[in-house]
View 1 (cartoon, rainbow, N blue to C red):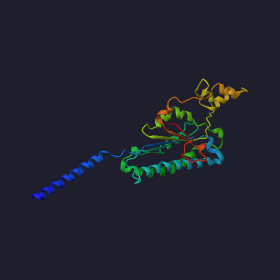
View 2 (cartoon, one colour; view 1 turned 180 degrees about the vertical axis):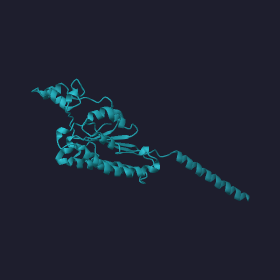
View 3 (cartoon, one colour; view 1 turned 30 degrees about the horizontal axis):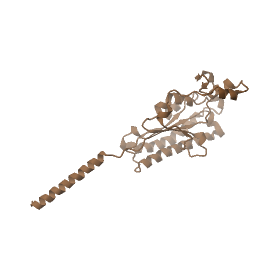
View 4 (cartoon, helix red, strand yellow; view 1 turned 120 degrees about the vertical axis):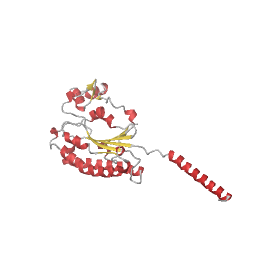
Length: 264
């Protein structure tokens, strides 16, 4: 090989090495993964589902499908390839504690969840696709079995306070942006309010407050001066989890995913 050819070969080799080193450097500076989302949908299956000749069931199913649509839409925005290799989002449907809800429904609701982080990268797209089919099949069946009677008196109240106090912490993901959707009529009433927790003038059921004040003609004044209200939950610190809470009944004029109030 001539001297000129040798010099040219060495120059090309050095250039290739530099390009390789640059590629390694860029690979190490990986783009951080997009923010992780954790969606929780809490269902109130009390006598509210009897409303308007059970039309509430169809409304609930529409809202849940929209929430799933939001979940999938955000996945596709984060990963236009729809492979979801680098994503770890989660979605789960839960039933609020309620004595008259058949126990098997809580087991069925365990199938209504998508945890992309728990799946192998090459199987994440398949998981999302199959979960959508499961939701469309299982959800209507859950509501069908939740209709235990046509009479309101045969239903107990959904204990949303208990869920916040005992279960919510386990469902939150400290490394994600958590969004909790609650499908409820907002009533905090239970058939046996005397057995429920209370502290001073704070209660876990609206019925407890009513029973305490209904004999007083000036109940509204007593309510204000006595600082009556709901007892705060003890196991969830609102500030740290910096999440969004969406209560569906108050969203009649909004899209289902627009929050009625947030906690940051």
